[in-house]
Length: 340
Ligand SMILES: Cc1cc2nc3c(=O)[nH]c(=O)nc-3n(C[C@H](O)[C@H](O)[C@H](O)COP(=O)(O)OP(=O)(O)OC[C@H]3O[C@@H](n4cnc5c(N)ncnc54)[C@H](O)[C@@H]3O)c2cc1C
View 1 (cartoon, helix red, strand yellow):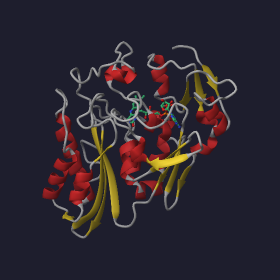
View 2: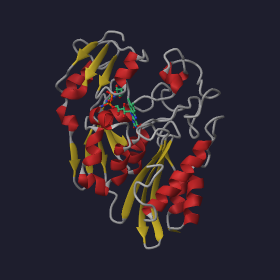
View 3: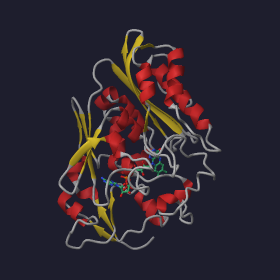
View 4: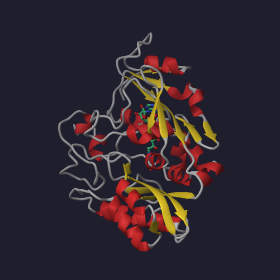
């Protein structure tokens, strides 16, 4: 690991000033924010990033908050583990609690922060191999496109085929969360759905709209409202802990035997959390039956263009969508075997 300076600012202003372009007193050339370190330290050890300095955010205690009321406010430094255990959150924002519980291992969740989870870098093995100068690291080629692409994108890919690795991201997009980031002219808020960027949008070496001198500060998550229920299902190769091969964040509003409204976001299949507007529109007003679930699942993966080794993800994602709809219809025991 290359040596670096470690700054421990006590205020947000100090932290932002230390980031590139912040004009802080000892502004380094390339400083990176450090939260729980569960991703960034691996990147440093593997020489994927070699900044001059790290700006340790953990002294910014105002970013640790988890406020649970009519809505949720989640600070960027709130631990992922805090989301799985809060009883009101589990009851009313179930999709988020279940997504949090599916992240990595208990030890990692106790260190990892929500902001770090949303800003973590891709897990594509070409990106993670320091000897592979892939397009995400400033090279000219996505080696996954014609290489070992079992874990890569089936939707929204090209010219990079990474998938977004966060489990919290699909759940929070499903909940219509708003994110607040520090900007050059003060904090600004935007829908979380607009925070994430496809490889064809913004900079290909980033996965979101944040600039190098900006921080994710907090998330605001509205209540789903009366009649809504939600769930998160994730398929992974290793049962103990693993990133998603595919996942499904689903919220539905039920009225009698019908689905009045639905929100559906897939994870593990695209470079961003993949919202499924056609499936959402189709589900509104439909009878809550297996035929409806199958048709919605097919619409969820509309436009999929699998690579040589990841065609299975189409069927996996469709299966998760049907299973999630079945679960919210009360016909699937919670935490049944297989995908959870
Ligand atoms: C073995 C293993 C298994 C894992 N499995 C899963 C999984 O199943 N699902 C899943 O979702 N994740 C998984 N992860 C990823 C893990 O959840 C993330 O590494 C972790 O959440 C990152 O949070 P952190 O606070 O440690 O961030 P850090 O490692 O400190 O930072 C991560 C990145 O975000 C940036 N950053 C951090 N905070 C901010 C901020 N407030 N504003 C702007 N940029 C910021 C950093 O500069 C860095 O680039 C796994 C990780 C490991 C090591």
